[in-house]
Length: 137
Image (cartoon, rainbow, N blue to C red):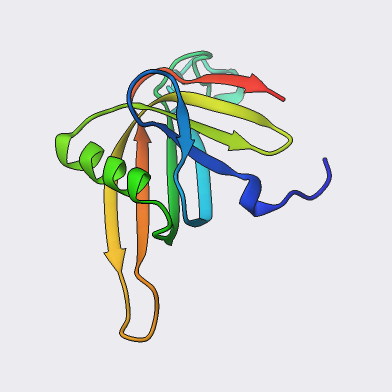
């Protein structure tokens, strides 16, 4: 896989619930992480005393974070409303040369900042809220 532009990693939100996704505008930095908890089934009978893990068990989760500047009133208003209403709408994450991850996420943090001689910025954190789908490119 060749090097990719960071700006091509996109977070999109379903603004109205009709399956039409719109990029959250103004993001400058984005991060996606996938996690899976393990289930330890080691016993006195485990070969050589080595740890054994139960295949296919445990909790899977994904976390998304992004930061940027305000560029679009619609996605800013929607993100803010999702947070205050506690909604879990569908999001899409486009990962260049990898694929698209889609599913319900909850906005777990929404932070605003600014300095007297700079632009207003925001940071957004999301946690998966159900099963995710993945479509490879």
